[in-house]
Length: 263
Length: 264
Image (cartoon, rainbow over all chains, first blue to last red; front, side, top):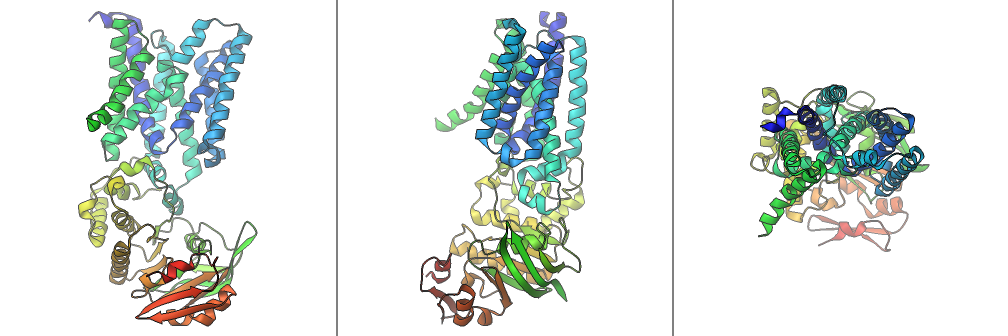
């Protein structure tokens, strides 16, 4: 196949693979913990981080990572008062986007950069960025694996977990930081505006279709990888953006089952 | 042997007195019904025993030590359960995820874990429903599985916070009989909070009644009397015994959930 002759496509598939593995694994817990809106907000916060980085002349990925990690830490410390309050999250989210537009205008940056931050661009991933993504994914998956037993319990039955002596706040802070890494990486593929489609979509579908942890998280990872790969193929042959294909496929999958149930 | 002992126990939450100098002791294998209006402090008492709250005065000893979070020999069934998307998992998975949950690592099950789960499922007769989505089960079936979960650590003490909520009368009886039967078999001490004294009458050894920060533990015929409840509430209250059931009648509205005591 000619598609794999190009280095940029090889990079895109490899980057897509690591991003999808992390998104699929994290996403399963994000949905379990009802944190989808918080992850959406982290996406918008990462926009401010990326545009600030452009202004400072450093890599957007780095700016995104720093700002989302910082915000995730704050969210974890503030706890459910913030996390389960749609209004506060919404206001922070909007401000982050506003801040991003300020940084963009101060930078007098060109629209191309803004578009690739907002909607992602996997077709221009450099070797060093790919290496960074791989390292971040390996590290995050390792931490997630170590936390997974208490995290699963704390996510499903927090009241009971608290009584059993599971450190809820600690787990929440660490998980949100992992989520910050996941959001930053996912935004490279689908952009900060479409985090939902990669981090939440496949995981929500996997949770609908399965009844056990292991089958659920495996399906979530598998679906995310497949989604990204199929979308990359479609992007290559149609020249339509990757973020469009991913979001369209998630929509089809998510509602496909409901439509069949209706008919 | 006394498993729970309190000496002049007092609790304040947000400058409000929830419990006021309460001394009591509960023996091994006792079934205690914890009654009282909403917000009287029934859950607070359970949280003290769990070590989730600290007494502001007095002492509390549970299984011979100061209460601390995560005691392996206390089984707990919390009252408020947020409906999370995790409830789409099976009951079996819920039980599995609570095993050794404070340890880090992957949630893998050893064969010993599986034996433990099967044994508690068997104890409550929930094998048939354990493989279905928890979300699709009825209230009674869910409570049965959550009871199994509370039994997982082979507890000496079982704390059940309003397990009858949202259950129809038939399921209430089924659940109460189940708890009593398991507790008797395994010599477990039970603290069971509820609104309606009648449902618990056939199984409970003693009743713990909390009103406005004042608590009393004793036999039903000692505690649920016109005189005693009138003095607890500070308003005339009549207790009628009829055909083995107890009816608590207040003269005024606003007695919390007193109407629950006199249904039928």
